[in-house]
Structure formats: C-alpha cells, structure tokens
Length: 443
Image (cartoon, rainbow, N blue to C red):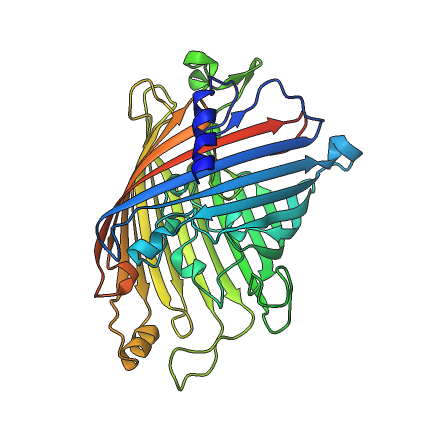
C-alpha cells in the first residue's frame, strides 16, 4: 500500500492539463500505440476511518490496480467489428467491512488480496439493426443493472443491487470474481436496447479450476431492456467549447461532448445519460436449498427497475442536477435479501470554475426476507429486518487524470446485527487513470 500511494502521489504531481478527455480519464502524451491497440493503467486507493459504531474504530486502507488492453481487429488484421479485451487486476490492503460489520460493502474496491484475470473476451458488432455478441471472461455488471450517476458513489450497493449481488450460491460473475459468459446485445432503435447473457452459475475456484463449468453448478441467465439517451445527444452546441487549460469538448477541431466516466475496478466506460429507464431480471438454472427446514429446493431469481433523469441543466449547458432511483426484488425462499430500494441526487459543476466536479447524496436500503429471518430466530440469532446506507461524496478532478474523492457514510443496523451500533465513517479515495490509445482503437 505504501509503494502504491507513493506512485499515485508522483503521478498526481506530474499531471497537467490534457485535451479531448472524457470525465475521469487521462491520456499519456507522446506515446504512439499501433493502430487498433488501446492500453490502460488505473490505480485507486481508499482510506476509511470509522468514527462511531460498527465493530472497530480502527482505520482500513485498500487499493486496486487495473491493467487493460483493448484490441480492435479491424485495423490490425482486417476483421471489421471484432475486438478483444484483456483485463488484469491486483487488490491489496485490509477490509473496511470487517471494521464495520456491514452487509452491503462500504468500498466497491474491497476484494481478496490477489492478482486475477478479470476479463478476457472477444466481441463482434454486426450491422443494422445493431447486434453484438461477446464471449469469454466477463463482468455482468459492466452492462447489466447500471445507473451511470450511481457510479460516482463508493458504496458497493450503488453498483449492482444488493439483492442481485447476494443472490445464488456465490453471487453473479462480477467484481471481484468474474466468470465465463456469453452476452447478446441488440439495439433495434436509437437509444433502445436489449441485453441477454448466460454466465457461470457459481463463479470462482471451488476446487475444479477458476473458470470451470459444471452441470451441477448450472448457469445464471440475466436480461435487461431499456431506453438510454446519452447526455451528448441533449447537449446544446453552444456548450461544445474549449475550457480553460485546453481541456474540454474540442479535440483537434472535432466537437467531443463530454459524457463518459471510468468506473473503478470495472474497465468499462459508462456514458452519462440525460434519460435512462430499464427493467431487468436474473435467474439461476439450478435450485438452491431453502431457508425453511421443511422447504423444498427452489431456484433463485429476481427482478429490478431503474431510472435516471437530468433534472436541471446549468446555465452554461455543461453540468446540472440529476436524480436516479432503483428497486429490486428477489425470491425469499432461498435468498437472504428479498428487497432493496435506493436513489440519489448528483450535481455536476456546483463549484464555480470546476465544471467536472460532482457532489452526490445517495441512500440504499436492503431488507432481509421473512424465511431467512425465521431461520435466524429458530437458531437463536437476533437479526434486524434491514440495513440502510446513506452516502455523501464529492468527486474532484485534478489535471484530468487524477480524481480525489472525500466520502462520508452512515450505516444503520450494520449487518442487521442488533448488537452492532450504527456506524459513521469518514473516507477518502484517490484514483489515477493513464490511457494510451492507438489510432482506430475502440473504446
């Protein structure tokens, strides 16, 4: 951790203004990559100090290193519409949740201490109507159950919904334990899309290999349909202008409306939206043991509905106020959580002369299902009905490549354990992203 923090500090001190960059993404200057090759290096570190409640008031630090290569095979070997992604990660440090005792995950960086192959897939894009296929080691949450605005928060439940992430035997194939998958995406009309994936039902190494598949483990089927209108489509042309220091919406004479952010630990860019509405669901093919002693095995499945909307645009057309909301439900016979509800507000550009900074306030409530609660009572284990997280965060860019993010979280009923007091935490995240795009590289 100490070496990683020193590297991050040096990179921050050496960072200057950059041109033609998306929010939260930097490009190294003067490095010419071969056509069709894009390389990225990302480093993020969290420091959290519980100041009240939880299990311990000791501080916890952790980090995550991402190494990514994206190859577009059209300029490389002439295979139009075909690309390959390879993404490797390293996680180190302690556990914030071990200090707090919460269920949902204070930091979305937290993972076991290891090097891992995070993604390795090949994808192909067809013509109209737009259809794309992807196969390989894949993060389901890269495209499913995504609220762009919620990606600015640190708590894990603002990413994949908690009832989804805790479903099944080992959860879905997502950070930090991904798995083999096949994904189909279709876009029959502008801004309208459909997603379908079949992924490993029990990702991880259970004695038969990291990416093994077996009939006993089954598969996870995920689907989603939605409408997502990019923010760039609603940006007035008057807002496509240079900003101080050359960073802005123009690159080599071509208008480039800002509208993307890099999500920590995912290796995916999420396009900011003016409107997004989506409905989806998931189901495991193999039945699981029921909570009730006399209950027969049942399949784990759930549904979710989410939405995000630009509520107010600032006078310069660059920032503004956005709101998001999500509700998810899961079968309670075999899943611990049967419901989660969350939402939040974000304002971009609230500080004068800092149009890229974001302040956000969000809340997520996760509820235990009745069969799980009854099983705990029968075992003599006192358990609360639910856990609530409230997060206040401020995301500040420094020089286009570095993000500094102070964060405050309050957690009511950590882990649904009545013996654990409500927790208050102060946190800080630092993130740097270096990208070396080659001409013709896909993003």
